Length: 72
Image 1 (cartoon, rainbow, N blue to C red):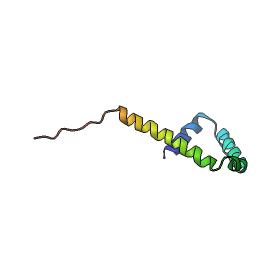
Image 2 (tube, rainbow, N blue to C red):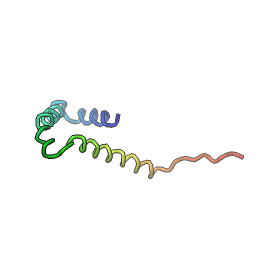
Image 3 (tube, rainbow, N blue to C red):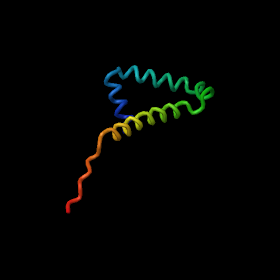
Image 4 (cartoon, rainbow, N blue to C red):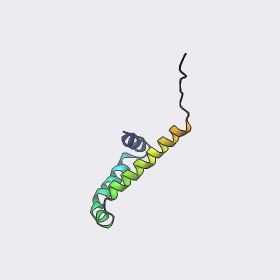
């Protein structure tokens, strides 16, 4: 869901044609990239996902949680 949200925000900033052009180039040059760097797209997606998850966990660690004290 986060990836789709970021893609929507990015497409609103950039033109949709630019994003489609980038995706078309990746599809066109995927075979040579796959030979030189195995699992290229998978590794890129995982690294971006780990960066986003790291930022979310960092924010969760910085913001203190409210813990309600038990009433007696």
